[in-house]
Image 1 (cartoon, rainbow, N blue to C red):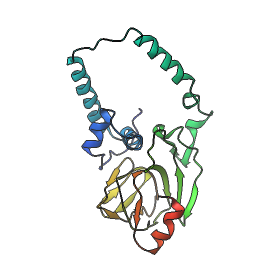
Image 2 (cartoon, rainbow, N blue to C red):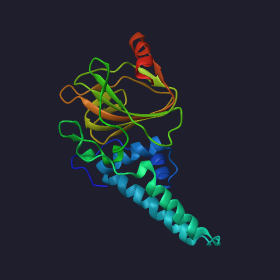
Image 3 (tube, helix red, strand yellow):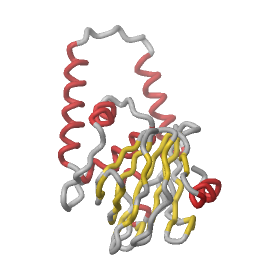
Image 4 (spheres, rainbow, N blue to C red):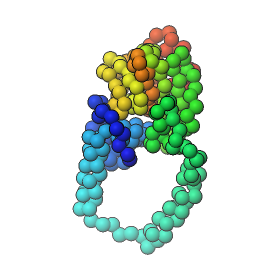
Length: 227
């Protein structure tokens, strides 16, 4: 996990997300947003590392269980199956060099999830849907590219949502967000993000549950956007 140079993020995943990430207890889309944030943030990398160390110390103090006689052979067989599965095959050559925009490389956490072909949603707004293995039916992950100074329709959420900024900036009622920042929303919140006037914004968005559109434009867009 190579650190990303630049100013450190001001908005971080919640402590609950970081602890559950260290314990391996996040859903695939939740783990994705944390993994995308970590290269930007030394503070959160240290927190996750501390969680790993604590978990390892607790495991070391537990009395060992007796292993089945065929445990090693079954483990090796599973490793062989994993190595030969389609998900583990080599990615197309040049994949890591793909850019989401000029000077904005595809983050390592997103490699292999989708080819960067933007789908037009509305004036100034494009999306790439991501294919994340193990995602539940009510979970979604996608990239949003928002042109400079574009205001998204006002909306709330029927579940949890997190956004990690990859490039540029946006603001909403909860604050201002730049590269590496994470914004979390629950079912009680309503917001209307506005992208930076000079930079626009490219974000990773993950969610559980559908949007609650507010206003005519948002309601008209929801069937098209599919969220």
